Image (cartoon, rainbow, N blue to C red; front, side, top):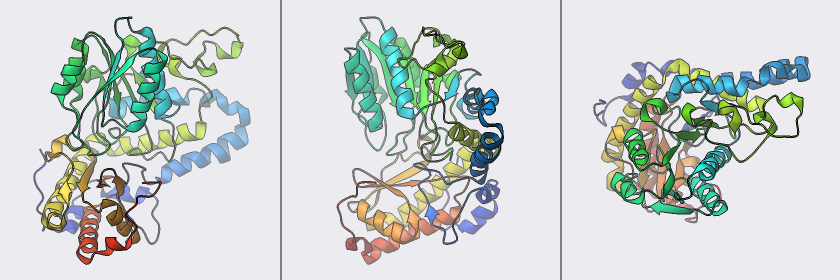
Length: 421
């Protein structure tokens, strides 16, 4: 249990006692370095990720050329196993690094829709799920003559288990939710929800994009069936780095994904014209994997594993606690309200605040070298990356936010949000 950290605590004392402070030097920082609180959208570049990419280019590709495929070909499976064991609570052979989160979600949802009994024609999700997830599920439903049943979730507090229970029944084939809500950071109860879904006879697919590398996940213990997630947020593998998918071992022989590609073919170099999918999670691969991206994920997973997901979570909770105290002490009187669960244990790796001028305040923050991000409606997310964010970062960021609003600096900015936000 994390105790409250008073707003008047000296952040330098907290930084001196921080067991993860040594990891800050393992990330690239500019000379005029911004206070970066957007690692929940795109993590900072770790030195070892750059080194991994350059190793592939300057050593493996350059000197081995096509012969490097002798060890590249198994890399997405090897890195999947590393990720599974270090922070997903999954077994070997259940996690694969391949494609994007959206493509992986499509593959898994389509596989369930194809295998579902004819009486199960409903996919359930919530209206606060990440928009891409909703779009993918709508497309899958249309292709398979199914229906998407969307429940309402409070955008600050997350999924309501009672609303979900009322929506899931004998007609349900699949339920798809985010473990950590992208807007508020609210954490869903993975085990309880999965058990509820299983009681109805449906399968459960979790989006772990805001979970992996930020909060401990135990897919095996929770009974989760399927999962997807990205690697460029809390894992810091770089923009557009390949995503991962998880398929519980017991389901792998029952589900067939819809994109039949060369890398999921048994004995692919036999060049057979008839598709015969690999057994196991390899059957969910598609075309040639981006090796530089997979190598970046390997290095990123190694770094996060070295720190330890439990230690990362403990610091994240403490950063959240300190930030919450500062928000209450310095921002509430200036029109800010908390837009995340009040209970720290029910909050993921970021804190969200609401303000009617959130977009303009965010633009003013950028001008002061404090980088958070904006989400509709009128919310600023402050993402905490325990491997490179300090308590002093949090102290400075909140001070800047308070100073901006107190001086009315946000009024100089166009209130219409830009395209990228």
